[in-house]
Structures are given as C-alpha cells and as structure tokens.
Length: 368
Ligand code: FES
Ligand SMILES: [Fe+2]
Image (cartoon, rainbow, N blue to C red; front, top):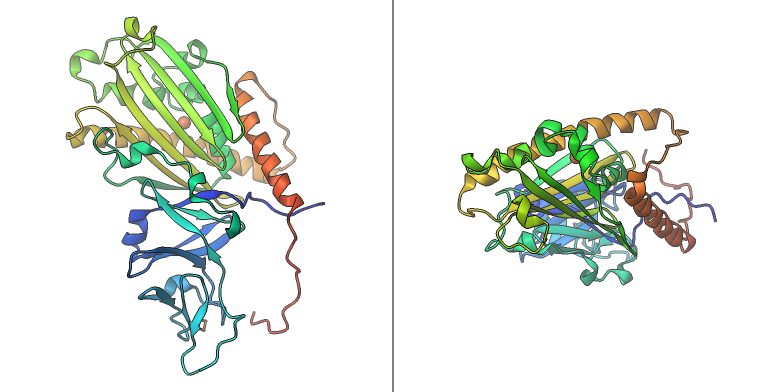
C-alpha cells in the first residue's frame, strides 16, 4: 500500500526540557512530527499534551489559560481536561461527546518531557531510553540550563552527522577535533548493530588533547599526549548517547583504567517538520564538580562546535531540498548511518502497513 506517512509515530520523542515549560508559564506550543501540540503542567503538577487547536474555531490552546487540572481556550472559553475532553462550554449546558481535541501520552525522564505520537494503547513508559547521568548530580555535572537548538534541517541529517565521527577532523578541526589527523589515525571498531540502533567505539591514540578538553585541564597537562575514546550509542528515533574518555597513552591500551577524565553527552533529534528539527543536548563531566568554570568552558567550546555542525547540515538541507533526485555515493564510514536509516525505513514501512489513512472529506462548514 502506498502511504504518505513521513514519521514513525509509535515511539517516544523528546519534546521539551522541563525548564522550557516552566519558563513559558507552564504551557509551551511546540510542533512535533508536523502536529502542533500544547504541552502544559496542571496546577497539581501533572504534565499533559493536547492538540493545539480548539475544536470550536481552531484558536490555539497554547494561548489559553491553565485552570486547575484543565486548560481553557481564551477565545470563547471552552474548557478541556487533560484527556482533551471538552468539559465546559460557557453559557451552554449540554456538550456533545464528539467535542474535544487529541490527547498525547507524555512522561518526564531525565528532566526531559517525552511524547508518544502514535497509538496511545502502545505507549509504555519503560520503552523511553533514559540517560542516568542526567539524574545523577553526585557523579555527573552538566550545564545549569540544558540546551535546545532549532535546526532548519531534517533530523536524519543530524543523525548522519553523529553516526560518523570522521567529520570532527574537518568540521571541528579547531574546536572538538584538534586536527585533521583524527580522520586518518582513528578507526572505528566493529559496528555493533542493534535492533533499535547501533553501538560504535573509536579510539585515537597518543595525540594532543583536543581544544575543548585542553581548556579545562591544568596548564601543565595541556601539551601532554592522551588517548581518546568515543563510545557512541544511537537509538531510534534519534537518541545519541556518548561516553568520552581521556587517559594517558600508556594506561589506555589496557582499557581498564580508573584514573581517567570522562564526559557524558546526550543529543536528541526530534522532527518538528520534514525540514526542521528540535535538538536537545547536554554535556556532563566528572571533574571538580563544584567548579562552575568547567561547565562554562565546556558549554562555550561545545556550542561553538555544534554551530559548526549546524552551518554545514543546514547548507546540505538547502541543496537536497532544491533537487530531491540526488543519489549519494557511499563510503566505508557510512556503515553506521546506513544501518540506522535501514532500521528507520523498516519501522516506517511496518507502521504504514497497518496505517489506515483518515478519510479526507471536505468540511461542509469550512471557516477558511
Ligand atoms: S475557538 Fe476555542 S472556544 Fe472558540
Ligand atoms: Fe559534529
């Protein structure tokens, strides 16, 4: 069956950092997979996600008002509960049970609010890929405010970028990479293919620490060679987790060291539309936890690096959008991204096979 679905829906997508919702007066308008949604926190502290379009005249509920455990549309005052059911129409005693808006299951984990875009009956919160360092301030210190970036690019282009670290030698030579030699001298170990993603490890032996790491080292260590390991995990729909480990060259060959410096990094790519992406990330370290200067320096370095990615990926998006007939040439380094895209396409096909397209009928009461 030919389908027009663009996104896998039966999966959990990161939708917002918790602080983004509180900073927006407890209700945030955000489009996920081309579906406008209002995310809000009720007065009793429950998170909720509803279609951001009142069933009356289509005013956005994100312009509404939270009242107890409900949200009121501030155009003509219809009140909705957390399930999206219409529970009050001012000046009217009866309410058709057809009145209401779509409700999306949500769950908070790791200070992120996750949303389920598919069949609510299949939403199990145990399936959310939790990242323990985000909830472990005793051992890991991230940014005081975890980061959000908006990308003018399809999220799979960002997944591609993170699936092949040879790019850090060229895109991030002076920030995250350190030198172009990274691409030639560091070789990824065997790709571990998983049913929902992949794992990959890449060592770079006996080279100068890259600038972002050198900046947070004591001065005498900055010019000493290190071994560097990036241990990457990528999961559907776009969850990237990475351990980065630096050790002195003699110790790392055993790979069983305790006295190393480590980082933990999470990056989440959530489609906003087919051409734009919500990008959430944090970078955590395990050194001198109460020294805020380390996080501040890492933030500056990493943000500079991520902007380098953004520039090249958004440029790529423009070229691809201008001519969708482009057929890429594959190189050895594409193994991981090819595996991921295959998984994605399989999931999309499986969902599409069960998908019953909504009947598109012309409304008899169009208001626009
Ligand atoms: S548009 Fe929402 S109550 Fe009228
Ligand atoms: Fe990058």
